[in-house]
Length: 331
Image 1 (cartoon, rainbow, N blue to C red):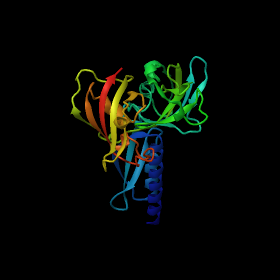
Image 2: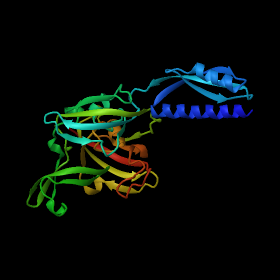
Image 3: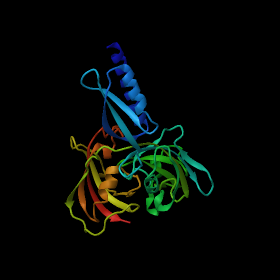
């Protein structure tokens, strides 16, 4: 009957509004079917009113004969941030000693990362666990929980004539590294030699991050990374977060075998700090599985490499990568 059609449309609209609201609030939904027979629009509306409450939403769907309706009562729980979840957060980063604000998400959009995925500093990874959407926390980031301590091994000498024109001491440069762009500060220029400092600009500073969680979602299954040993290491000494490593590598595209970079070709090993985001996630996750002296192939899916953007014009979007790596030294 015409009134039944109107009732059906209203119910479908109500369902859509509820589903959209739950999606926005990132709620986990449990559904329990409850059968309600309605032989008229009036009875249906009474059933809707009877089933409504502040704590329970009613989902209605048409099933079977025109006079048969079913409701689904949902009890919902806010998701809490946990290892492996995809999170978004607004943040403000300040120095605790001076109160100076050094970074913020304002105007840049929320920070997006996978909790426990080593995509952010360790203190933030740990500090957001248990947060709910809308909650704000202040998280202290210093030492190993932040950007680490100053490391002299992150200083590198380069020919001064290789620097861009107009470069002076204190200039921040973007330098091509084995896994994409790296940031360095010109620490010193002496005659024909310059010293580049690859320590993070915030290294050693006492910091506080005020974080407001804006989104919390279950992450899809993680892409698989493989580490294939070519030459065994000592089996005793393995890298851990914060260690400075010296490695040789050759990077190729998995699809074609084309080489895009190699420290062996340059004759100079690559030095970096593991577990702090200086390299792509596939390196951070794969190299810690190697022992000192080991040579291995890291087969890295695009999601743990350069993803949808690619890098430097030599790594296309969504490219799986293969790195032939050798762990030469652990500091």
